[in-house]
Image (cartoon, rainbow, N blue to C red; front, side):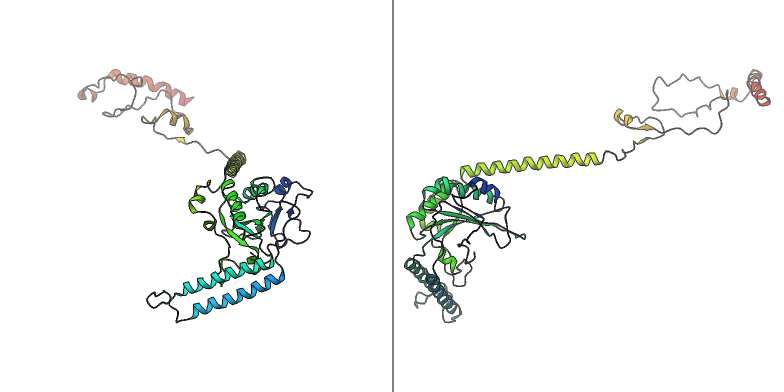
Length: 383
């Protein structure tokens, strides 16, 4: 978070107030945190409960005093870290404190001093911090904004809310920061009331309540001073058992909305997939169909199915170069070779072969029959 994140520039167009021309629903539909990209001029989307909102900016005197204290604390913490005489682990027998214990004492003193500066200068406003993933930020922001204006949050001290827009470039593990503002972050009962609404009515995961003065002087979780970046942690306001007794991380209304959004996304994905499939089929409609397999020569396959036979196309027989002569007898089958797979209809009765001795002698009648069979052939040749 930047030092100017709590300050709204004059005439900032990405904020909504009750006297705005757009209704709240139109504003939320027009400016969605997942769609609005931050180009340096629109880092936040704001929604205010009323036109007369408390001042979020701290005065210069408070910021100067707090910044000076922060500088001193940072130096003291670094000195403790660099002091070799201070043990890493405490020694109770010798009465020596560890580096960690000494640092925590300095940081605790700084926290109390910052609270005093805030109260002295009237700079006590703060906010609850919530992080929302990019795929849910629109739903989370919609619920918080509506709750602030006309829902459960409207009856609390919360007076404004903001959400971070999307970065221009792709940022891995990016989460949108959502802030719900309270007028006095040190008012424990009021801050706790807002916390209960956020937990019980909206089921949100809270990251703590932070002072706007902390933001103004640049205190965050990575500051070298090590000062806690939040004034209140969840367990400091409510018991852990109470927090766990709240609804799941998302309230019922939000769960229902996210469920509808999820299934709408699934239906959209199915429709797109169906359209892509239909497009591919249409594009491939003119392509050549695969050639059918040619039926192999050699007769029927006794083990082939009827479906395979239906898919196969009989290979065309080559045209003979010369017509076979009529009257020529078919070559007799070789002796001892039977067609194992021939059907009963194809089988013909076989005549018993004559005795070998008789087969060696040709009778006169046989010679005459052959002469008569060859006589027409000779005549056709002459013609």
